[in-house]
Length: 117
Image: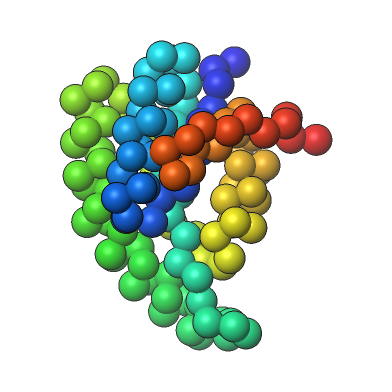
């Protein structure tokens, strides 16, 4: 089974470095790569606000994901890209667990997580 790497992405300069690190790791370990962007709704969130926020975030991040796809293609990789709504740390951990990620890359630094139980 291939290793899986989850990269948190928010469009910042640090997130760009995280993506570059994640690409390098994924290529080096022949790992699958998932890039996750999280839109944080206001507290307390309401369903209508969350849906609108998610749609807006998907449109905004899709533009950025296009550039990331091109960078990945240049290295022969095809990461998966997702957008979620919620608290960023919670969503990253939730997606890492549900996707069974072996590593999380954030702020340019890789980190290991235990296997999903």
